[in-house]
Length: 287
Image 1 (cartoon, rainbow, N blue to C red):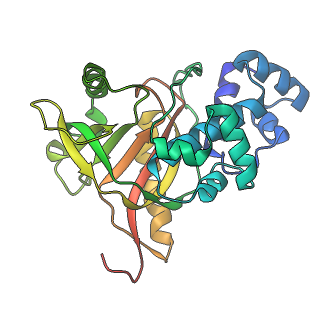
Image 2: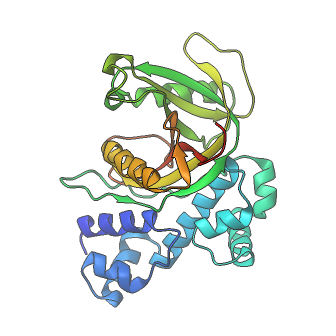
């Protein structure tokens, strides 16, 4: 199994954490036998496929416990656990707290494990998870606004936000976000508004460079896109198509929110898990 096959496997696993991921299925994606795949994966990742998948499921659950208002059981099921008890035991072993206590604390844990970055190559694989409707919590955000095409948003904006947060004594890791306020094709490219954002514990007085806004939360269709950041426009097209086909939902469209499950968004990294959140409401309900 070479690096390209490993990238395909990692991309598949990250987009299917809510499903039953069998050893045979991922070995087939890598194009090798299950025993050979098991040895090669452990040698390349310093984790077995089972350990790797469990870690990602727990890390996704930790993020969703902080961001979502949905029940702990629903979050557990979304992350591939079959029952509350199994999830709670695994979560406590990983983070030292029960899920309910972790949610009450409201902070992400410091990460001690860094996954080797998989660099973008030609035809880098992408994968899209199932789309589920969940309720995002209200939150305070620090942000820097960019005007212009979304593909021109510089990574340096998040670097500035991270530097600002460190100077204010806010502890890492941070919840890094992007908020798209306008629709390409309707708003002129030079007028498109995009906020590079970072979740903060409380409101503050907006400064010259870094502003404060209150995110209202609410009902959103959530989908995990696994792939380079350049794959997001195509992912949005698929997500909007799914929502339009769901007769029980009305797509409100904007603002769309992205949650980056990395410590710093990097355009050249092939495997970035981005939670795409599109606002929706139930059909027949008032706006």
